[in-house]
Image 1 (tube, rainbow, N blue to C red):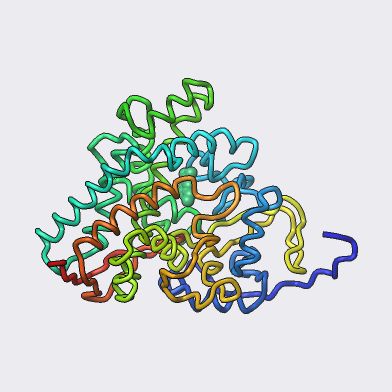
Image 2: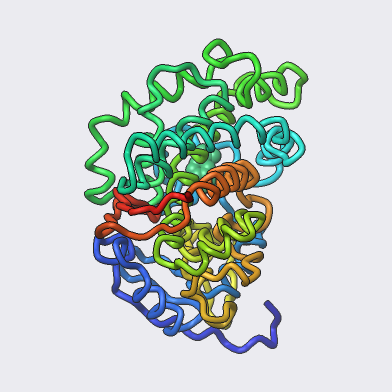
Length: 405
Ligand code: OVM
């Protein structure tokens, strides 16, 4: 902002509710409308500003000083409303408080730290694919059988969770991601089990609940070294359990859906399995599992000529930015020859997904295992979405496969 800046124009207004069932089920048309309306749009329904173009979303994500996370990254403003659970020390925090937990988790989830998991995770993926083909034949629900089964097998083991209660992980994540939106029917539907699910998750975050060799125990070791306080450790474990399961499950489903509907790209992956990682990022760009997050303006700020007042919430449409034709050529195409880097599906800046290397490793193992065993993959029925205020998620993905001979 300079004194010579043009006087700020008022932003175009949209009365749309991005959290209504029709827009959640099919967000593309609203995204296009918002991108075309202008760089900043006011959503009258929630009295917030929204950014749906790549350039502005990116700018807000990297400017953590102006666009804070500490007031919550959902619609609820933690400065005035009591959060549904103690805030995340990573996601819902700003520097300097954010930095110690971030550094601890960054080191534990760094590519080098994950190398020892690679071989075990590949074997697990090969085994799962073999079992699915042997027991379910050539038609099955790829959402249940692969996209959710695989992460639910390898990730909780890597964290160090015990064997009981893992069926709570997806429902807890579903609840947490709904809580970033308005208090609508999706939130109300889970109200009866907030207490039970939270109690189970919180119980898994104690030192005693975690096996000796997992991510969880390494978080507690950081507390023993003094890199975290003992009070911080369980909340950092909670971040793994909140952000680490549903995101990956729906990201893998997005990748499988893309391949089932783009047979040429499946052939390309079969010929060059080293494309598995880029394919996963391309799927995350195109069907971003995390569709939206909010920020809060720490000061009056001008975005492309629109004045946004201090203290107001700003809705960032990550999924829309990832399909902005001003940034991406032929943005709706699933294309393994494109370079998807720079997508904001994992965010950008200091909060960028700390678990992204874990997600890519899971995707690489599962997609390469499948590419070795499956020559052709197609939809065997209408895929069904599950609606969530934040996650672009799935209920079912029926596929038909032709195994390799
Ligand atoms: C956390 C957290 C929760 C939800 C999402 C997320 C995508 C992080 O608890 O830290 O990032």
